Length: 139
Image 1 (cartoon, rainbow, N blue to C red):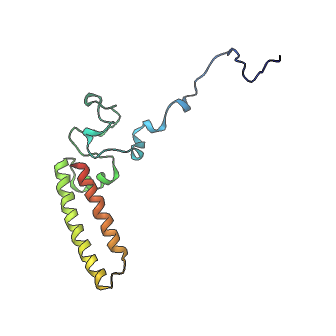
Image 2: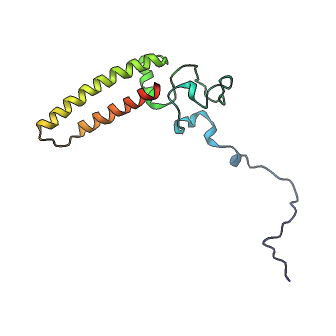
Image 3: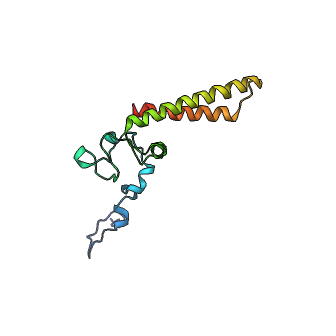
């Protein structure tokens, strides 16, 4: 019977080198947090400090603060210059009320126009829903 070379295990000779490019994930660096599914609060994040039970990779971690890396939250944090979750909730509440008023006006106008679907009305609804989602995440 002939030997099948395909399934024969041969001894490795020489020096074995580890290819570092393949063993390190590019998603371990902070610049790639924007692709991660980050929670709204720092206390719930896997990247929080090691003392708090995280992996310690976030450079802007603050206990009891809002995430400063998530784009949607960072946008509001720039306006109030604080990471206090309660301040952020207050701002988002105010924005939600203003957005609801804009939606009601746009909805009334579309009814006067014969209930024709309007791009502005849909945009107001989407904006209101994103703010409501953030408020729920922070609560």
